[in-house]
Image: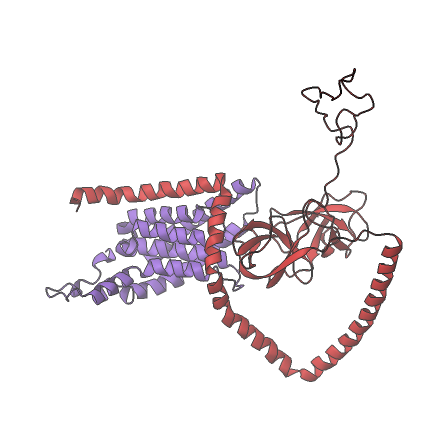
Length: 310
Length: 188
């Protein structure tokens, strides 16, 4: 088809052209990262069933191993479970009593009930971090109502927030990712802080009040800003070194399996417009009043209704 | 010498007939390195929970491209490297284009120096590869820093470079055997 000379020129030009294309991809990643991530999410969507099939034997073997380990000391395990059951029954009674009391108190305070959040449950399709980030992909099925910024929890505590959404899959940025910053409240000292991920298993606590250091072992909860409600359990404070408090997350960030994504709605925490800070727009034309009144405007009427005073 | 004519005894005057089956066999053997990279990229993106999965994805792709680019360039043309790089990019979530560019650069180096590299011993090849693997990891780290607008810890990049350099000998053993047997188009 081509002469030998043309083919040699084409062969020589191939690599520089391909390198230029690769550089173009790097630049596209810098300028339009969501486009590239969207394509990757689609690829994962297509491969999600294959991933389940690939991991299935490993899951079965792990289940067998757990069963086998349990079968070796059944008697001891039974005794431990009986003790635990007794303790749990006690805590169940306490919880029921507290729930009843809480309900009574809320009733007498005319407490406005919080709306129950919508949630979807999904299995982790794949760990999606790479060397520099911590994220997972969840298979939530088609027709889901997940939005960016929704909160992901496992059975123990907060995991992270949804950053990208595909047709079947959503990407959850974990709390220990370097890009994650979450406002938190310390349960015992009532101080506020920011929990910042640093790609290790234990996110750091920063910007806490300098006269009010976090206390070792106290609970860390979400503060309740933007789409995140207050009081979601995150973990406990631990000092790795003096003046270096970190959070030991309740959720097992290394081995994630079933994850729930909650939609708390993002306009729950919106403050109303502050009076005096809203610019009043003057009407462009004077409203003409019917009936041929002698004055153009009723004297007692505010200039613009529903906009707040000046 | 270069392994393109590594099995001259098979080039006899009497060539086997070019049946469809034989052609497919030759094609499959020639495509073996590229298929290996794509398969590894897909497998290592599954949630097995093995530590260092993404680093291995990068390391295996780098080792494979490097080895085949100088030892049998016909099994690893530039466009195949590009497609392999794209598939690795598709099944990883690092900074876009970093792996693809690293693979193409290491391919260019290995392909350009293929005569010299085939004359060199294994250890020298490994040392040169180590330098470029470290360079590629550094490039990836720099790109992540640019994306994050912050100076991140270089530890994951160092781990990735160390893993890439560390798995090279064992992969070379596999590839040397494969070049003689299952990935040798002359054996079809």
